[in-house]
Image 1 (cartoon, one colour):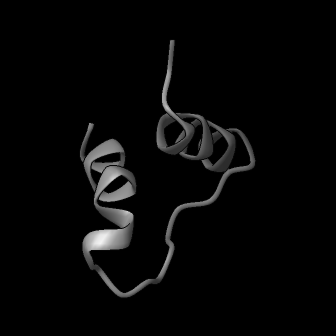
Image 2 (image 1 turned 180 degrees about the vertical axis):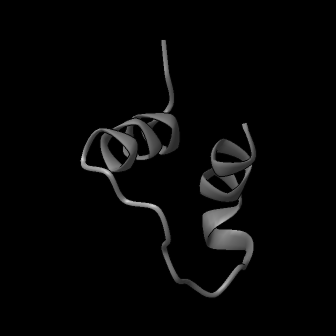
Length: 37
């Protein structure tokens, strides 16, 4: 079962998003890991 972060990345890819901005931190490490995959 994919994580919420993986689903978010999949949705961003499906919408054609090529760049996102954010402040890396402990709260969003799962998202950063999913983006690296």
